[in-house]
Image (cartoon, rainbow, N blue to C red; front, side, top):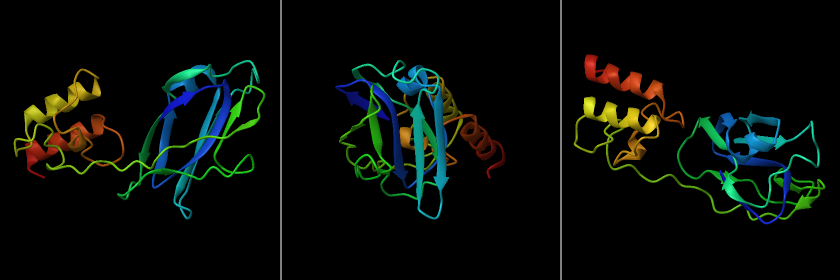
Length: 178
C-alpha cells in the first residue's frame, strides 16, 4: 500500500474489503512504528489493520513524503475489487493521525481490481506449457531479480503472495502431472 503524505503521520487504521490479511510488514510503518496489528472479520468481509508507535508517541512519526506504507499478504480473495472502507471522520474505522494524534481527512483512492490473466496459472512465460522455464521465472520473481511476462499467473495457489509454496505446487504439476 503506497502513501503520499503532506503531514507527519503518527498512526493509521483502515479496513480492506474483500481479503483476509495474513501478514503486514515492511515499508514506512515498519520503519517508524513498533505496533502493527491486523484482524479479519469474516462475517463483515473485511480486514482491519492498525499501526502506531507505543514507545515514542508524537516522536516516532512517518515524515512528510511518499513511499510504501506497508506490504500486506492475504488470503480468501474471492475475485472482484479490493477496497478501503469509507472515511467517516475521527470516529470511523479509516483514520490517519497527524503528529499530534489528530484525525486527518484522507483520500483513500480507488478500489483495486486485479487484472485478468490471459494464461493458465503457473504459465508465467505464456508459452502454453507449465515447465521448468516457468519455475525459473517465478524463482527470479520471488528473489526480486525480474518480473515474468505474465506476473498474474505467478500466484499459483491464489493465496495473495508469490512464494515457495507456489513453486512447490508447480513442481508437483511438472513431476506428477497433478
